[in-house]
Length: 244
Image 1 (tube, rainbow, N blue to C red):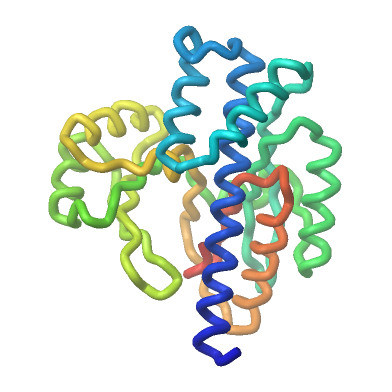
Image 2: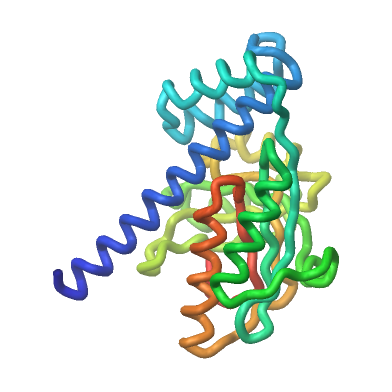
């Protein structure tokens, strides 16, 4: 396999892994909604929103049905847990999990960090380098000028380009204060913008991005990939410039 073919295969592998991670996250959100408020989407707002996100993300029906069935029959509940870690070269990582077994997630996340050369951090020792914000992903074909005008009218805090690994424009990130996320999202939808709700939500944004050398970047990238391979991990944020 040539270098170009290898890069394409690697990119496809990452895309497939990201899709599987998204499917898993939405499946857990569906299960959590059913456990909290029942399996009827008419009466269950959480479930209705989760099913809408599943439809937009084209999550296979069997995954949704399996999670609804499991949640209806099981007493297990999901908990949101956040972990922190030091990466390579003084970088910081924040790891978000949605898990039905906190002890398992702690063990798996710690193992992933250690094996990749990172170090588990005490609570709060990394998180202060990040700001909690709302992030709404808007389709790339809407055009930057239109998205900017709509975002400013909606009361957004900032707008950023979202890029693929090859530098191609993937969409636009509309950033908001946490308390404004719902209102801004509704305003953008009312203005007719195509939102990618399955890729939107509350995120951690680094206050400062750290530049590292090539070897350190690759090591931090390996840490990111190990963390994302953990079933309970739903999102990973880092201070490494260019690492997403």
